[in-house]
Amino acid sequence: MANLKTVSKKSKAQSMGMHTEVLTGRTQQKFFNPDEAENFYYFGTYDVDFNKRTELDVKDMTAPEANKEIDNLMSQGYGTIVIKNPQGKHSLGVGILNKLNLIFEGSLGYFGMGSCDGPIVRINGRVGWSCAENLMAGKVVIEKNAGSCFGAAIRGGDLICKGSVGARTGIDMKGGTIIIGGDAGAFTGFMMQRGRIIILGDVGINLGDSMYDGTIFVGGEIGSYGSDAVDAELTSSDQDWLKRKLKVAEIGENFDVSKMKKIVAGKKLWNYDNLEPTEKKGAI
Amino acid sequence: MCGIAGLIHRGKSSNVGSELQGMLQALKHRGEDSTGYALYGDTDGKNFIMRFKVGENVGEGSSSIMEDVSVYDERKKIVDQTLAEMGAKVVKEERTLPYSLRYEIDYNTKDLLEFSQRIESIPGVEILSMGKSLEVIKDLGNAKMVCDRYSLDKVVGTHAIGHARMATESGVDIKSAHPFWGYPFSDVSVVHNGQLTNYWNNRRVLENKGMRFMSECDSELIAVYIAEKMRDGATLEEGMKASLTGLDGVFTYFVATKDSLGMAKDTMAAKPLVLYESDDLVAMGSEEIAIRSVLPQEIDTYDPFDGEVKVWQI
Image (cartoon, rainbow over all chains, first blue to last red; front, side, top):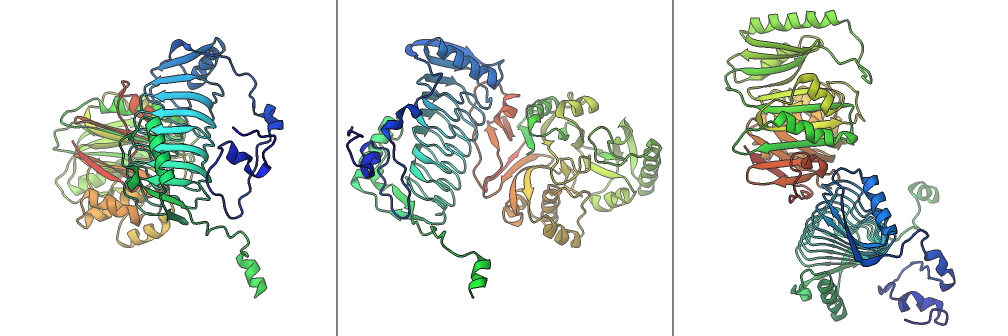
């Protein structure tokens, strides 16, 4: 990695690999300042050992009780925790700001793994709406299907669903990668601002509606394009990246990425300087 | 926000009253102003079952006006007279609560429109359901309270739909509670989660075509809309598909008939629905925890996509 104290401000983010998109238009880039590094550490995190493993049966627990117990186990140094009988409960595994190997033996309800930063999670079941919302870093793998608003507003990390997902996947996402093995619903990538979405199957109507930036790759059919979502050329570096990502995600390893479609923002909706109707009337 | 749940057993009967109670109780955090059940019980199919009310529940939280209980008896008397005049014989009569009644009626007709209009012309009387299998039971409170009040936990049948309501756009009363009967069609019922934004436009058009509305709850429009389509010869599935463009707003709804259960989701997929489907059972609800109340083991579920309509037969 480049020495952040010596490289120019303009290229720091690129040097760190924080983004590779060619940002154009009136984008405002906020750069990481290494002098502020201490602001990025969390207090109250634990030093855990991935080889120290335990199981937690949450069948008769409420979500707050289960989440508190996960925190308690991390405080004891457990780095691998297997959750038994989640049974579709909401808000399990939220707010984990720690490195952790977390395995759910079953399905989660709404808001599972929300607001996390760092854990590696495998869910051997399905997830409900808004899984991994606002994920900062880490990896979440869902073995079955996912509900709507999958990966809403994520800022980093890899979010992988091996089945199909509902509507508004990646809505408002600001970074990271979402990978879908099956189909995705309507308004996928709605108002996304950065990051990448990969869908191996079909996708519903209004794909990438009002997206600011970021990239969507689709392997199957597209129901319709949303406002300002346009096709872009699939480059060889895109294909290399897709192959690598699908392999790491243990999904679609033999998928022919050369036939995928690449969708980006046309950036024609950026017209904040337009006059409001009343102002126009006044100008006439 | 409201919660809806439904299930259909294919090729067998089960204790659908208890099962639906469990599903709706799991969704009580989505609303417990009122809860309603549409149960398709095992019957011999000879007589009509009419569930009707002669007043409102005016208990705590109700938005209804208090009435003297003696008014209920007066209204019941007029209903009995009207039935006799129409040649409808009451075979069995149950009065679960002062305002809520269940009649088994021996009456030979295929057109329930005139029958229903006569009964509902009596002020304060509303038919909650009419059919040879369907019974709509709805009242204030959560699923368990309503189930206990009406002893629904022992009802055996093939399918059922239900609704846990958080009142937003109309009153906390039985007339605005779901499910809605698909008046005047025998054995048709509807539950809905969402908001319809072209309610008044559609209502005016349908009223001009002779359809009836009993409440100002937007969800009632779905029942009337589909009933009108079916009156014009459409199948249930065709009526539901037409609703995807005919109804504006956000919605997920279920419709049940004597031998089928259907679901529809609007084209923006704005309202949740989780579905489990196997050869002998379909169970669905606003949240997976509803399904888990009848199937606690690990199962495969999925979210139907935007604009999807599905219909299952018993």
